[in-house]
Image (cartoon, rainbow, N blue to C red; front, side, top):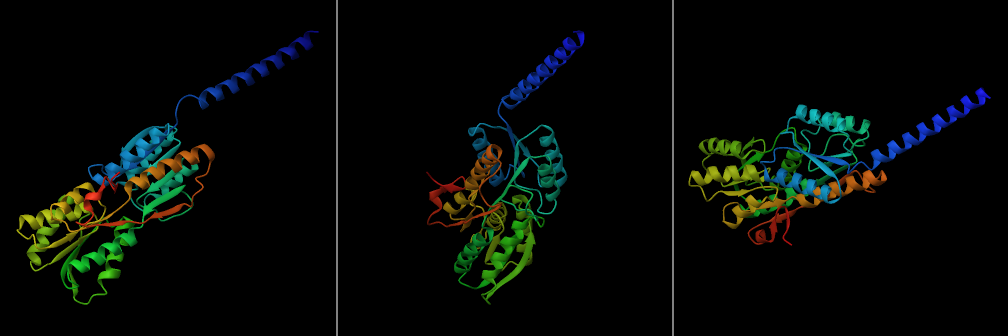
Length: 319
């Protein structure tokens, strides 16, 4: 009798433990909204600031908490941020990365922890470890900008190219797109090519130095808008309003400069669309385990000139 009683008590205890475990599981699953991390380079750059704001706001609209971080193009900081977000139990990370090669280890670490990574703007050098790589068609944008630049230059003249950060794949893709067009014109002569690391301040200093060495330049083609604006400021300070300057990104600052008759053109990156797509695809992956999209996704760019500059703001057509 006592043995049967003890056996019955064991069964009761097992059932109670199972019920408690199931209840605990149910509570953790409904404990509140999941979290998505959004990591970008310096938000002082309007491009990255808009990207983080739009992606984060869309994620919150979809019901998630967000943790918004800045890696300042430092791969070590980025890895530390990944480790922190993983330890906090985030469901996904939206990332504009700190280097095509240097970021692979961080993305792999997230994948191994079951955290989805959705890359925007900048690709990495390995496929199959991120859920999505959503980028502008940088080559297409570079070629349409270069064609317009050549037209503005009258297919001839001395020009300068300011390039982006060397660790960024986009810097090389844009430069290649520029030269695949410009190099077809024998009377277009590049007298200087120098990085300004995406920085407006650095571009100002670089342009001042280049002007001293090559006072006869007629044009500047830059790898992004912040460098173009820095170069334009240096040229204006030197009284050289005649030099044709074009940028790349389609920032509101660049558009306002075009409307003032300073910069002559830029290529608009669809930041808003990329950021929204990243948040929506992260949500779909979290809910269903799939984005139903290919990993590599490319969105075409738009040439912005004085003729259409008033039709765009915040990296998108005006509503």
